[in-house]
Length: 358
Image (cartoon, rainbow, N blue to C red; front, side, top):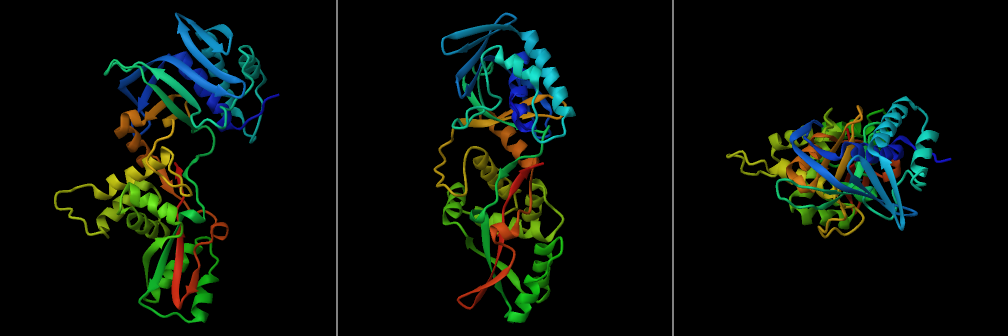
Protein backbone atom coordinates (compact mmCIF):
# COMPACT_ATOMS: atom_id res chain seq x y z
CA UNK A 1 0.00 0.00 0.00
CA UNK A 2 1.46 3.38 -1.04
CA UNK A 3 1.06 6.18 1.50
CA UNK A 4 1.94 9.85 1.16
CA UNK A 5 1.14 13.34 2.39
CA UNK A 6 -0.86 15.98 0.51
CA UNK A 7 2.26 17.42 -1.11
CA UNK A 8 3.33 14.00 -2.42
CA UNK A 9 -0.13 13.07 -3.70
CA UNK A 10 -0.30 16.53 -5.31
CA UNK A 11 2.66 15.51 -7.53
CA UNK A 12 0.54 12.68 -8.94
CA UNK A 13 -2.47 15.00 -9.27
CA UNK A 14 -0.40 17.55 -11.22
CA UNK A 15 0.83 14.77 -13.53
CA UNK A 16 -2.72 13.52 -14.24
CA UNK A 17 -4.13 17.02 -14.65
CA UNK A 18 -1.58 18.32 -17.16
CA UNK A 19 -1.73 15.08 -19.17
CA UNK A 20 -5.54 15.41 -19.28
CA UNK A 21 -5.40 19.12 -20.21
CA UNK A 22 -2.77 18.54 -22.97
CA UNK A 23 -1.56 22.09 -22.32
CA UNK A 24 0.19 24.22 -19.70
CA UNK A 25 -1.30 27.49 -18.51
CA UNK A 26 1.09 30.22 -17.41
CA UNK A 27 0.03 32.19 -14.33
CA UNK A 28 0.37 35.80 -13.21
CA UNK A 29 1.46 37.14 -9.81
CA UNK A 30 -2.09 36.74 -8.44
CA UNK A 31 -2.30 33.08 -9.49
CA UNK A 32 -4.64 33.76 -12.41
CA UNK A 33 -4.27 32.17 -15.83
CA UNK A 34 -2.63 34.33 -18.49
CA UNK A 35 -4.94 33.50 -21.38
CA UNK A 36 -2.36 34.59 -23.95
CA UNK A 37 0.33 32.27 -22.54
CA UNK A 38 -0.74 28.69 -23.17
CA UNK A 39 1.77 26.00 -24.13
CA UNK A 40 0.60 22.81 -25.89
CA UNK A 41 2.26 19.74 -24.34
CA UNK A 42 4.17 17.36 -26.59
CA UNK A 43 5.52 15.03 -23.93
CA UNK A 44 5.70 14.65 -20.13
CA UNK A 45 8.65 12.90 -18.45
CA UNK A 46 8.79 11.66 -14.86
CA UNK A 47 11.79 9.94 -13.29
CA UNK A 48 10.80 7.27 -10.80
CA UNK A 49 12.80 4.64 -8.93
CA UNK A 50 12.02 2.01 -11.58
CA UNK A 51 12.88 4.15 -14.60
CA UNK A 52 11.73 7.18 -16.58
CA UNK A 53 8.11 7.27 -17.66
CA UNK A 54 7.36 9.16 -20.87
CA UNK A 55 3.77 10.25 -21.61
CA UNK A 56 2.94 11.36 -25.17
CA UNK A 57 -0.22 11.54 -27.27
CA UNK A 58 -1.84 9.72 -30.16
CA UNK A 59 -5.18 11.47 -30.69
CA UNK A 60 -7.22 10.70 -27.51
CA UNK A 61 -4.81 8.05 -26.28
CA UNK A 62 -1.87 8.60 -23.91
CA UNK A 63 1.16 6.51 -24.87
CA UNK A 64 3.20 5.59 -21.80
CA UNK A 65 6.72 4.24 -22.22
CA UNK A 66 9.03 2.93 -19.53
CA UNK A 67 12.13 1.07 -20.64
CA UNK A 68 10.87 -1.45 -23.22
CA UNK A 69 7.27 -1.48 -22.05
CA UNK A 70 4.48 0.54 -23.67
CA UNK A 71 0.96 1.17 -22.40
CA UNK A 72 -2.02 2.86 -24.06
CA UNK A 73 -4.55 4.57 -21.80
CA UNK A 74 -7.33 6.97 -22.82
CA UNK A 75 -7.06 10.64 -21.86
CA UNK A 76 -10.53 10.34 -20.26
CA UNK A 77 -9.09 7.92 -17.66
CA UNK A 78 -6.51 10.52 -16.66
CA UNK A 79 -9.31 13.11 -16.38
CA UNK A 80 -11.43 10.79 -14.21
CA UNK A 81 -8.54 9.89 -11.92
CA UNK A 82 -7.48 13.55 -11.61
CA UNK A 83 -11.04 14.37 -10.42
CA UNK A 84 -11.09 11.47 -7.94
CA UNK A 85 -7.66 12.43 -6.58
CA UNK A 86 -8.56 16.12 -6.20
CA UNK A 87 -11.70 15.19 -4.24
CA UNK A 88 -9.67 12.90 -1.94
CA UNK A 89 -7.04 15.61 -1.39
CA UNK A 90 -9.76 18.06 -0.33
CA UNK A 91 -11.35 15.52 2.04
CA UNK A 92 -8.28 14.07 3.77
CA UNK A 93 -7.23 15.51 7.12
CA UNK A 94 -4.59 13.02 8.33
CA UNK A 95 -0.94 13.75 7.62
CA UNK A 96 -0.31 10.64 5.48
CA UNK A 97 -2.82 8.40 3.77
CA UNK A 98 -3.35 5.86 0.98
CA UNK A 99 -5.73 6.16 -1.99
CA UNK A 100 -6.25 2.58 -3.24
CA UNK A 101 -8.09 3.47 -6.48
CA UNK A 102 -5.29 5.84 -7.55
CA UNK A 103 -2.64 3.28 -6.63
CA UNK A 104 -4.48 0.73 -8.79
CA UNK A 105 -4.50 3.17 -11.73
CA UNK A 106 -0.75 4.00 -11.60
CA UNK A 107 0.01 0.28 -11.18
CA UNK A 108 -1.83 -0.33 -14.46
CA UNK A 109 1.13 1.24 -16.28
CA UNK A 110 3.75 -0.26 -13.91
CA UNK A 111 4.33 2.90 -11.83
CA UNK A 112 4.86 2.08 -8.17
CA UNK A 113 5.70 5.47 -6.71
CA UNK A 114 3.88 8.73 -6.01
CA UNK A 115 7.12 10.63 -5.52
CA UNK A 116 9.58 11.49 -8.25
CA UNK A 117 13.07 10.03 -7.84
CA UNK A 118 14.74 11.96 -4.99
CA UNK A 119 18.13 12.25 -6.71
CA UNK A 120 16.47 14.17 -9.56
CA UNK A 121 15.91 17.86 -8.87
CA UNK A 122 12.85 18.26 -11.11
CA UNK A 123 9.61 16.59 -10.03
CA UNK A 124 8.55 16.58 -13.67
CA UNK A 125 9.90 17.54 -17.10
CA UNK A 126 7.65 18.75 -19.89
CA UNK A 127 8.38 19.20 -23.60
CA UNK A 128 6.19 22.08 -24.77
CA UNK A 129 5.48 23.69 -28.11
CA UNK A 130 6.26 27.39 -27.87
CA UNK A 131 4.07 29.00 -30.51
CA UNK A 132 5.87 32.32 -30.17
CA UNK A 133 9.28 30.96 -31.16
CA UNK A 134 8.36 27.70 -32.88
CA UNK A 135 10.75 25.82 -30.54
CA UNK A 136 10.11 22.70 -28.47
CA UNK A 137 12.08 23.17 -25.22
CA UNK A 138 12.13 20.60 -22.40
CA UNK A 139 11.36 22.45 -19.16
CA UNK A 140 11.96 21.10 -15.64
CA UNK A 141 9.52 21.89 -12.82
CA UNK A 142 9.19 21.28 -9.12
CA UNK A 143 5.61 21.03 -7.88
CA UNK A 144 4.18 23.34 -5.22
CA UNK A 145 0.75 22.53 -3.85
CA UNK A 146 -1.71 24.83 -2.11
CA UNK A 147 -3.74 21.80 -1.07
CA UNK A 148 -1.32 21.01 1.77
CA UNK A 149 0.67 23.29 4.08
CA UNK A 150 2.62 26.17 2.56
CA UNK A 151 6.18 25.19 1.71
CA UNK A 152 9.34 27.18 2.42
CA UNK A 153 11.31 28.97 -0.28
CA UNK A 154 14.36 29.49 1.99
CA UNK A 155 14.83 27.26 5.03
CA UNK A 156 16.25 28.79 8.19
CA UNK A 157 19.55 27.62 9.59
CA UNK A 158 22.47 29.15 11.46
CA UNK A 159 23.70 29.82 7.92
CA UNK A 160 20.87 32.35 7.41
CA UNK A 161 21.72 34.44 10.50
CA UNK A 162 22.62 38.12 10.10
CA UNK A 163 24.92 39.63 12.77
CA UNK A 164 24.39 43.18 14.07
CA UNK A 165 26.50 45.21 16.46
CA UNK A 166 24.65 47.04 19.23
CA UNK A 167 25.94 50.60 18.99
CA UNK A 168 25.55 53.99 20.72
CA UNK A 169 25.29 52.57 24.21
CA UNK A 170 27.07 50.53 26.89
CA UNK A 171 24.87 47.89 28.52
CA UNK A 172 25.52 46.41 31.95
CA UNK A 173 25.44 42.63 32.47
CA UNK A 174 22.24 43.13 34.43
CA UNK A 175 20.60 44.96 31.48
CA UNK A 176 21.77 42.28 29.05
CA UNK A 177 20.36 39.49 31.23
CA UNK A 178 17.13 41.41 31.69
CA UNK A 179 16.66 41.83 27.90
CA UNK A 180 17.64 38.22 27.13
CA UNK A 181 15.15 36.92 29.71
CA UNK A 182 12.16 38.54 27.94
CA UNK A 183 10.10 35.47 27.02
CA UNK A 184 6.88 36.81 25.52
CA UNK A 185 5.22 35.38 22.40
CA UNK A 186 6.93 38.12 20.37
CA UNK A 187 10.16 37.96 22.39
CA UNK A 188 12.54 38.89 19.52
CA UNK A 189 10.49 41.99 18.72
CA UNK A 190 10.20 42.91 22.40
CA UNK A 191 13.93 42.45 23.01
CA UNK A 192 14.79 44.70 20.05
CA UNK A 193 12.30 47.34 21.24
CA UNK A 194 13.93 47.25 24.67
CA UNK A 195 17.37 47.73 23.06
CA UNK A 196 16.03 50.67 21.04
CA UNK A 197 14.31 52.21 24.09
CA UNK A 198 17.72 52.44 25.81
CA UNK A 199 18.98 54.55 22.89
CA UNK A 200 20.95 51.82 21.11
CA UNK A 201 20.90 50.91 17.43
CA UNK A 202 21.52 47.68 15.49
CA UNK A 203 24.16 48.04 12.80
CA UNK A 204 24.61 45.14 10.36
CA UNK A 205 28.16 43.75 10.46
CA UNK A 206 28.17 40.53 8.46
CA UNK A 207 26.43 37.23 7.70
CA UNK A 208 27.18 34.39 10.10
CA UNK A 209 27.94 32.18 7.09
CA UNK A 210 30.59 33.62 4.79
CA UNK A 211 29.33 31.30 2.03
CA UNK A 212 25.78 32.71 2.26
CA UNK A 213 27.14 36.27 2.56
CA UNK A 214 29.24 35.81 -0.58
CA UNK A 215 26.34 34.16 -2.41
CA UNK A 216 24.35 37.32 -1.72
CA UNK A 217 27.21 39.56 -2.88
CA UNK A 218 27.54 37.46 -6.05
CA UNK A 219 23.87 38.10 -6.90
CA UNK A 220 24.15 41.78 -5.97
CA UNK A 221 26.75 43.52 -3.80
CA UNK A 222 24.00 45.50 -2.00
CA UNK A 223 21.98 42.43 -1.00
CA UNK A 224 23.48 41.71 2.45
CA UNK A 225 22.67 45.25 3.56
CA UNK A 226 19.21 45.24 1.92
CA UNK A 227 18.19 41.92 3.54
CA UNK A 228 19.64 43.01 6.91
CA UNK A 229 17.51 46.18 6.86
CA UNK A 230 14.44 44.21 5.72
CA UNK A 231 14.90 41.80 8.64
CA UNK A 232 14.98 44.68 11.13
CA UNK A 233 11.63 45.91 9.78
CA UNK A 234 10.16 42.38 9.84
CA UNK A 235 11.16 41.78 13.47
CA UNK A 236 9.95 45.19 14.70
CA UNK A 237 6.67 45.64 12.79
CA UNK A 238 3.55 43.69 11.82
CA UNK A 239 4.69 43.39 8.19
CA UNK A 240 5.64 39.95 6.87
CA UNK A 241 4.86 39.75 3.14
CA UNK A 242 7.94 40.21 0.95
CA UNK A 243 6.25 42.87 -1.16
CA UNK A 244 5.23 44.91 1.94
CA UNK A 245 8.66 44.66 3.55
CA UNK A 246 10.52 45.70 0.39
CA UNK A 247 8.12 48.62 -0.14
CA UNK A 248 8.86 49.71 3.43
CA UNK A 249 12.65 49.43 2.94
CA UNK A 250 12.35 51.39 -0.31
CA UNK A 251 10.60 54.25 1.50
CA UNK A 252 13.35 54.41 4.14
CA UNK A 253 16.06 53.98 1.45
CA UNK A 254 18.84 52.93 3.88
CA UNK A 255 21.39 52.57 1.05
CA UNK A 256 20.74 56.13 -0.14
CA UNK A 257 20.06 55.16 -3.74
CA UNK A 258 19.15 58.00 -6.10
CA UNK A 259 15.35 57.55 -6.31
CA UNK A 260 14.74 60.77 -8.23
CA UNK A 261 13.66 58.86 -11.35
CA UNK A 262 11.86 56.07 -9.47
CA UNK A 263 14.34 53.31 -10.23
CA UNK A 264 13.03 50.17 -8.39
CA UNK A 265 16.41 49.38 -6.81
CA UNK A 266 15.18 47.39 -3.82
CA UNK A 267 12.44 45.47 -5.65
CA UNK A 268 14.70 44.55 -8.56
CA UNK A 269 17.54 43.30 -6.35
CA UNK A 270 15.24 41.36 -4.01
CA UNK A 271 13.51 39.68 -6.96
CA UNK A 272 16.91 38.56 -8.24
CA UNK A 273 17.61 37.09 -4.80
CA UNK A 274 14.40 35.06 -4.43
CA UNK A 275 14.58 33.92 -8.06
CA UNK A 276 18.08 32.55 -7.51
CA UNK A 277 16.86 30.73 -4.38
CA UNK A 278 14.05 29.20 -6.43
CA UNK A 279 16.56 28.13 -9.07
CA UNK A 280 18.85 26.32 -6.66
CA UNK A 281 20.87 28.76 -4.52
CA UNK A 282 21.35 27.32 -1.02
CA UNK A 283 22.87 29.18 1.97
CA UNK A 284 25.35 26.41 2.77
CA UNK A 285 26.71 25.86 -0.75
CA UNK A 286 28.80 28.11 -2.99
CA UNK A 287 26.45 29.54 -5.63
CA UNK A 288 27.91 30.04 -9.10
CA UNK A 289 24.70 31.13 -10.79
CA UNK A 290 24.61 27.80 -12.63
CA UNK A 291 20.92 26.89 -12.81
CA UNK A 292 19.93 23.33 -11.98
CA UNK A 293 17.56 21.36 -14.18
CA UNK A 294 14.50 22.80 -12.49
CA UNK A 295 13.66 26.12 -14.05
CA UNK A 296 10.32 26.72 -12.42
CA UNK A 297 7.24 25.62 -10.51
CA UNK A 298 3.94 23.97 -11.27
CA UNK A 299 1.53 25.38 -8.70
CA UNK A 300 -1.49 23.28 -7.78
CA UNK A 301 -4.18 25.72 -6.65
CA UNK A 302 -6.84 24.93 -4.05
CA UNK A 303 -9.47 24.60 -6.81
CA UNK A 304 -7.30 22.04 -8.62
CA UNK A 305 -6.10 24.31 -11.39
CA UNK A 306 -2.41 23.88 -12.28
CA UNK A 307 -0.39 26.93 -13.33
CA UNK A 308 3.18 27.05 -14.57
CA UNK A 309 5.84 29.58 -13.63
CA UNK A 310 9.17 29.23 -15.37
CA UNK A 311 12.40 31.17 -15.81
CA UNK A 312 11.51 30.80 -19.51
CA UNK A 313 8.97 33.57 -18.73
CA UNK A 314 11.19 35.38 -16.27
CA UNK A 315 8.97 38.38 -15.44
CA UNK A 316 5.95 36.26 -14.51
CA UNK A 317 8.16 33.89 -12.50
CA UNK A 318 9.75 36.74 -10.51
CA UNK A 319 6.39 38.45 -9.91
CA UNK A 320 4.87 35.19 -8.65
CA UNK A 321 7.69 34.68 -6.14
CA UNK A 322 7.61 38.32 -5.03
CA UNK A 323 3.83 38.44 -4.53
CA UNK A 324 3.44 35.02 -2.92
CA UNK A 325 6.16 34.84 -0.26
CA UNK A 326 6.57 36.11 3.30
CA UNK A 327 9.24 36.29 5.99
CA UNK A 328 8.68 34.21 9.11
CA UNK A 329 10.28 33.61 12.48
CA UNK A 330 12.03 30.25 12.85
CA UNK A 331 13.08 28.69 16.17
CA UNK A 332 15.50 31.09 17.90
CA UNK A 333 16.86 28.36 20.20
CA UNK A 334 17.53 25.95 17.35
CA UNK A 335 19.16 28.55 15.09
CA UNK A 336 20.84 30.53 17.86
CA UNK A 337 19.59 34.08 17.29
CA UNK A 338 17.66 36.80 19.09
CA UNK A 339 19.87 37.22 22.20
CA UNK A 340 22.50 39.81 23.09
CA UNK A 341 25.99 38.35 23.38
CA UNK A 342 29.42 39.81 24.07
CA UNK A 343 32.58 39.25 22.01
CA UNK A 344 35.84 41.18 22.35
CA UNK A 345 34.10 43.73 24.59
CA UNK A 346 31.49 44.47 21.89
CA UNK A 347 27.78 43.60 21.99
CA UNK A 348 26.06 41.71 19.19
CA UNK A 349 22.58 40.51 18.23
CA UNK A 350 21.59 38.07 15.47
CA UNK A 351 18.46 37.98 13.31
CA UNK A 352 17.47 35.04 11.15
CA UNK A 353 16.03 34.80 7.64
CA UNK A 354 13.37 32.27 6.62
CA UNK A 355 11.04 32.76 3.64
CA UNK A 356 7.84 30.79 3.09
CA UNK A 357 5.17 30.73 0.41
CA UNK A 358 1.91 32.35 1.48
